[in-house]
Image (cartoon, rainbow, N blue to C red; front, side):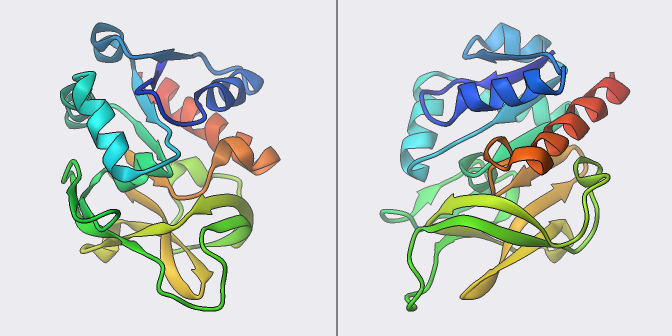
Length: 205
């Protein structure tokens, strides 16, 4: 079973329905014991970085998430679920993240492009994580965000996207997979990512 972390933010139902469409068992939960028993963790998110961290702290979920990752359970972060893995965010003043990965979450520089970055854009693969199996390089996925991650370690960057600048849109390190785009909003290829993640969990189990 995959635990979809419920901390009061994010498209939880959309993610749950996405997994259901590809016949992968996933449960929305904020129960620490359920998270501890789960074979994998998914952390979706939409909204502000600081609110996400505060909600996770208030629900005492941070330790459960970190513990799952440290035990080697597959982790899928979506949007904020990617960003909070990093050291800190510039959003509304500096805010500390989980610091599992070194780096900072930054706002897009001012250009003629609209912020937030919203809509379909391509992901250029730097390497192919298992969740991208069967998906072609420079495929389109759906984005909604005003901030992006700037990792200190280039080796964890699995994919990049162009929007005024080239930014990291997907990371992969060991059992950690995370995307700035939204698989649950990305139609067929997004469902393929969820299916690949579910199959990875089955193999790991």
